[in-house]
Length: 186
Image (cartoon, rainbow, N blue to C red; front, side, top):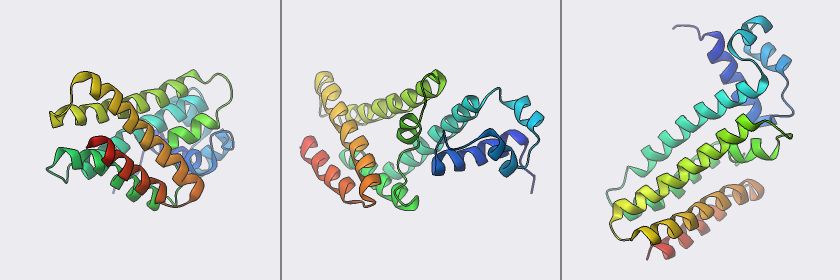
């Protein structure tokens, strides 16, 4: 098996650290030590800790959206595809012991500045918003104005379910959001 390169080891290590202990609580020296890379090697790939965080969030976005799509594609029914996003939330958040959303976590832990990280978090949330609206449009049941409003309401249910599940360390907020979403879709 091929050994990971420096960039991949740094991103993988930083991903674990940022997600589990927080951005502010993770230092460059800890990333270097746990990734087993030299400082010069790290800086050959990344200019700053912020650039490492952006790489982490970029990879997390690709992984997260891919898993969301895989989970929701199991159903043929378009309404159930939308509701299936809540099944994904239960699978994911249970797997990570309700640690929560990497984007929500990093943005609340972020000092002033760090515009590249903020932009990446905004990108992910906007992509999720577009995903919801695309799924609504695919049903053929809603006009454009309804899709905009309904999509935003569903996004708020998703985001609220994630953060409340993290606080509660339980999946009941996701199950409640699923029921609310189902009523919105009627």
